[in-house]
Amino acid sequence: MTFDVVGVGASCLDHVCRVPVFPVAGGALSKVRLRSESRRCGGQTATALATCQSFGLRAKYVGVVGDDDDGARICDELAGRGVETSDVARHPGRLTATATILIDDTGDRIVLWHRDAALAFDPARLPRAALSSARLVHVDDVDEPAAIEAARIATRAGVPVTCDVDHVTGGTDALLALVSLPVFAQHVPGELTGEPDPERALRALRRRHPGTLVVTLGEDGAAALEGETYHHEPAFAVSAVDTTGAGDVFRGGFIYATLQGWPIVEALRFANASAAASCLTLGAMAGVPGLDAVRGMVRGADPTPSIARIRTDQPR
Ligand code: ADP
Image (tube, rainbow, N blue to C red; front, side, top):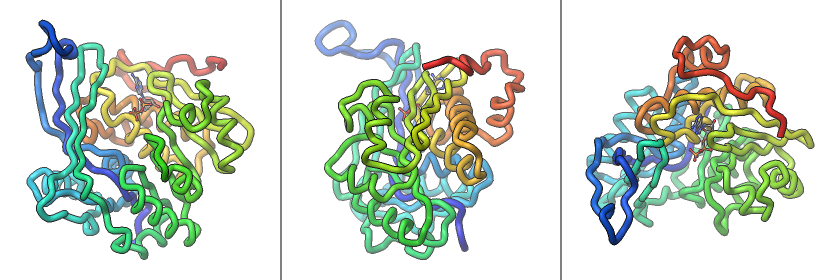
């Protein structure tokens, strides 16, 4: 079977805790009663692939979980959504990666995460045929050796590679060299270049990477440098309940748009709408929207009063 998108990277079991205020050590706020708690599936690549599948793409997830209940739950959730999981490794005797996510009443987040260092996917076990025959390969930077090898296999086969670059490590340059379409987290271009302004940072990165460079900007939407042209697309205004997974859903939407062959501005807009729709529901994978909801948002046809396109032509 061939896939539209094969993703290699992180999955995670999120413990989502709503709090009235964030705790502060050493005072009255050192103990805070949770408003609610729930356990939900997430993780960068797993959530991006769940989004691709939700939009009608055939998606395959490759990654590693523990041989515990959390790992089984992630596999079941992905499979239930139609994502192919036959190459998910279950690491014996290890716990699945987890994140404890505190969300306050303003929607701000604190994430405490744990991932056993032994939870690494053996690059020798990557499904070469699936990677070489996919229309697009997506990786993240959580398990860099596997991501780099997957990107190498794809690149050799002429398959485009998107990447979620969330933090700067010693392997970032090696990974970027194999990625055709990097999608950076907001802080990364600045860290890589010393330029705090996103446009200046992407222009500085142009010297190191010839492809279209994309950065997510939280409530400010997203931007891309295509050739020497900088595009900024504002976010969709929503009453965000939880932004967990918004970046992952953005990447899923961006992959969908890329595979449709849409121009970069359309792709950014569609990805922004996907991400904004995901902010309306608590949890990462639980917030993955359907295609119709996103299309409705893009058309401005969504009847929900809290949703409206904002600042479409704001100059930067
Ligand atoms: P991450 O979730 O990886 O930290 P961002 O915070 O940059 O990434 O968010 C990813 C995308 O989610 C943004 O590019 C934007 O489209 C959307 N987004 C994030 N926060 C909001 C918000 N409060 N309202 C609407 N869209 C949002």
